[in-house]
Image (cartoon, rainbow, N blue to C red):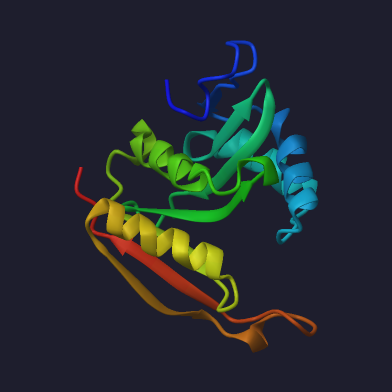
Length: 173
């Protein structure tokens, strides 16, 4: 038992579980993103990811509450790559390394058995995600290559920054 839980009763120690999402989790994922102020997609997107991409999505739950998730997929033209669309972590879990744990859970999935690269796009101002992916490369003992992906002018309206690709790999299994 570590010092942080030494004075807690067993009922007070919450256990995180990592699961494939069910469609019912889509609403909870959407709410978490909305509450955290992340880039909000339609609720349909989260439900769809749970239904059609559950093998490459992970939800972290504490007492049946979704406190973290990753939505990801393997692009048909890049079978050796898992693309991370979005990661959400509840404020109660910040600073506990949950995002990294969720990504390791994803990489350990059977669906990712042939994956050698992890990719995501990140805006220049999103230092938390940049640090997450650079840190994942270090933890995996591999490189993180950063390149241009989507230019700012591709996005409608004002205010969306360019998206940079973070490509981590090759991942040794």
